[in-house]
View (cartoon, rainbow, N blue to C red):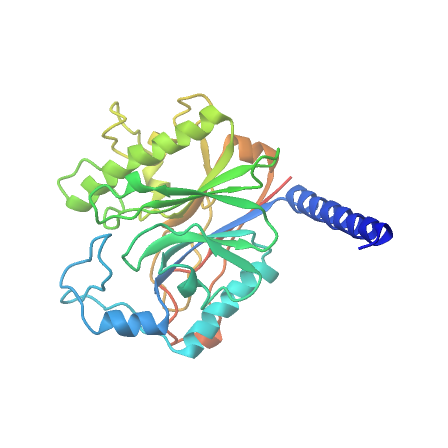
Length: 332
């Protein structure tokens, strides 16, 4: 290759590099829009058929690749191509209409399953290393730099609960933000955690794990957010103190948002927001899906807009999910 050609190639590479930097800076200055979505046992049709051929009477443990067929409980759903298309329309709306940058995913059997719904314009990554089909991970808009930080394995407190997925956006820049996606133990939606009830006991063990993660981010001075299915009515939880023992708290919110260390204070997306149902058959009254941000991230983005993305009325009767996306748009 001649010198003139080499010079032209170098100039092109520099132009492309500068363009990418400018695009990244523009995206960062435009803010950050976060979402969380539990997709209710989302698997590929092939995986659902294979695992559905046999099942376990009890919920499988984290190291077991199986489905439950617990008597009296609805089995994990089987979806048609039209069902996946309807879910895909919601994912498309998240990206194109709502401008979502990152979606924390729960109950998704890894990237291949997520691709059934998040078809274009997304990176599907940072899923927890778990054999069980219910995994936690992320859908990240194409073009956003990120780094997977490994699983928060300590959240699996008994070998059968779910680890957390951890990612850093724009690593190494002034706009760096760290996200932890969680799907906490189900069954203890309200009331103190010290009750003699196994789901509450498991959830009580998980709370200090998240608190340690929060406290470490505060000490590092990194802006962060917690996203996911908390399986807890956090509006009620936030009214009561965590109690004197950090290792055995009575509630979640006051344990995590206690300003100890200074700066460990969290804002909640659903605070003061009315409940928006996912469809006409939604009988829930309160959110269990939520997004929590720290004061550092809140200071960067003083303009915040909450939204829920219900399913289209025309998709009534389809097998979609028992959750729909919660969205929090953060703008400077």
